[in-house]
Picture 1 (cartoon, one colour):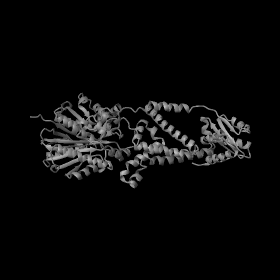
Picture 2: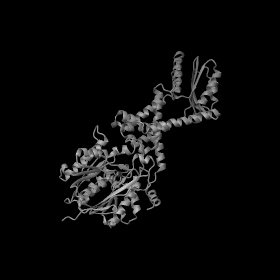
Picture 3: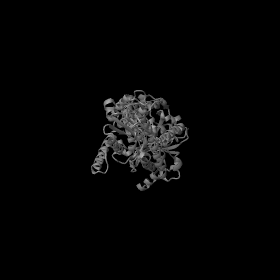
Picture 4: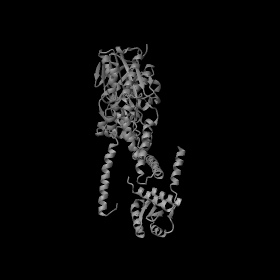
Length: 151
Length: 335
Length: 129
């Protein structure tokens, strides 16, 4: 059987990914996570001496903590199956990546297991986060110097 | 013994004297659940690693197999087995406990049939009287090696398959009473369909399954309709429909079946179905074996399919080469 | 599941309430602040407190103008500094500071108590992340 013919059969038999439905689900799940984050921000602003700017840090910490509990109980996996990118992109997805890797590698010990593998998945997020932040800052600096935008 | 292009004909009537299948808690939902010998309530005990649990499953399956045949562990000549973990450590560690002369085999999910073929050859040559052969897989252990951490939230597409937690072993002896005999075996060729998606194994393995089945049919001069069932190991629902489409045979619709596609029934949680070395071993050595023994099936072709990928090769952009090993079992008329 | 959806919908709906709030405290010398702020379309509402050293203005910026919020804050504070050359001016759209300012107005604080609160608010706004 020729390769082309085989590829055609594979194409025919493989169910198409429901792109629109998946995007809608990702939007809803991501939106709900972000709404919860916003509510936590309001909570910190209201009851603690945090301003809009400084409330971001404790909010992120709280969201990661919630993600940790959901990961440990196996719920985050189920949310991700529905949400896809909607649950992977917010900071909870980052928390999930770090925590799931740490849980996974606990049997190999604390130093080589957890310490060595914690950022197995999340490491690339940090690397490319820093790299892209550098380039965004560079572009903005140039634009400000040219007088197109202001800080 | 006549060897024609990879198909072996056994003259000494090696037979499957008994089988033992031990599965994990998730497999309770399987449509074959009643056929399994033992369903353990936990994937791993407290303070036990997944790899260690895999070893325990193998040991247990071997014990069950030998107990069912009323044999002693000391009387087994050779132990042949395989699994999916690096360096076959679970099977190696199980062999340490069993202390039987040991051969470790690896052809991914086709290990189950590879070990049976090797065991039958040992019987055929007269160099062994009792061989225990099979394979196992353990969901959490395999998942962490081949994919992401267990609790990592990644969306699985509809083509993904669920690696089963199961160990299936069979005791091979010459001319055991009231047992199905292995008449032929076909050693697979490594076939590459050019697929690169590790979450769509069915498509990658279908060409290998087709190659092996086709060669087996030609070399034994038979047609598909001569078999009660031709069962592949773990193509999954989508892989099976690809295989059927490739054959374009009027009989393929009913006779071609897949253990992985049927393993979890229609439950959508498992997407395309089950996979893993334990999947083919568990189904072949429980459901198919029992049907043969009860006389429902008389002649079956068991094709275990394996995708020979590693986490490294698919990250490096290599295609997924696959292999399929087949054995033909017959139940002789009682009398 | 259905209940959860209703609760969520309720949350979305209540967030859209469109209250315009214009409060200046103490009210005696308010006209100048009002004049400045009414010139800006993007400012939806404001609350302001003044004591002898400070002018504190918390503004509520229209949603789509929020991208330029720092620019707007700077412009307004420049205008107000011209009007109150002898006082320290703080213009901000921060929610926390708005709430704190509203608290002062609600409780109608006395002079010395108010000065203490304003000091606290100013230190809050200077805090870095």
